Length: 129
Image (cartoon, rainbow, N blue to C red; front, side):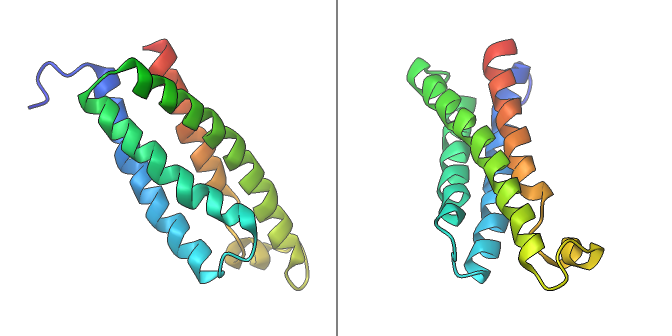
């Protein structure tokens, strides 16, 4: 099945699966927090959209899908950076502020950066390979 698959196609498949996994994690964590801030909806809507388009690109390399993926990936980079800012702010709002314990139990700083990093990988796949 994998014989003859170009690396770009494999990477789109990988990105689709990983964005789905990130969606599950982000959805559960933001649901647990009752979507207290409107920005919590951005990754819950954006990551499954990125996943679906990446999976479609793994099977059909269409120009419109590629352009949509570029736009969604660019939004993913920006939303991940904004999410890290919001998460960092959230850690500081906890009792005692920026302590090691609050970084361990508070909102994860690295998870939004993962969305940014995966989105950058998506842009690399589109433009460099």
